Amino acid sequence: MIKVSVLYPNTGNAKFDANYYFTKHMPMVRDKLGAACKSVTAEQGVAGGAPGSPPPFVAMCHFLFDSADAFQKAMAPHASEIMGDIPNYTNIQPVMQISEVKM
Amino acid sequence: MIKVSVLYPNTGNAKFDANYYFTKHMPMVRDKLGAACKSVTAEQGVAGGAPGSPPPFVAMCHFLFDSADAFQKAMAPHASEIMGDIPNYTNIQPVMQISEVKM
Image (cartoon, rainbow over all chains, first blue to last red; front, side, top):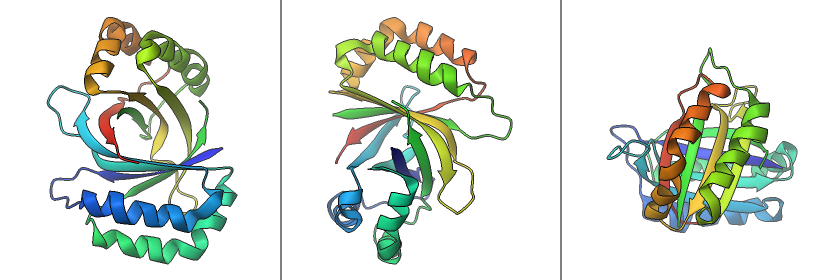
């Protein structure tokens, strides 16, 4: 099982429309990825580890797939639409990672 | 519901004993946090978003709790033991975040 994570670093001049992201963008992405995507989670940053510190990331989301290949196949037909929606809610350059689920 | 995430940035000179982390450290942390921790996931970085790029993070883990207060109460009695185990598997300074689960 692999996890695809997309993280939005909390840069100083970041704009991020959380309402659009959680109620429009993420549901659209989930629908486009279809049944190959086994799980979707998304969360909004609240705080960092040190008391009173800001969250390192404004938001994160994580998608589970059986394999990187299954992710690529599900993503390819919708990549331009999904990526093209990003400027509708943020000016942050997201950080993406593919991980192997261990636990 | 809140998610506590701990991320290990993939710095150039990073040392990370994945075997120790996934088979010793993380199970120990899960046991110490007890029933207040509703879910534990942990994953190992494989790749970045761009083709052939390295993962931005060597590893990540995520813990679900009912509230930040529930996390603090579960963590406090074991914080020194948990934090003290980090040098046993890495020289990376982990990044920690508390998020509100939205999806």
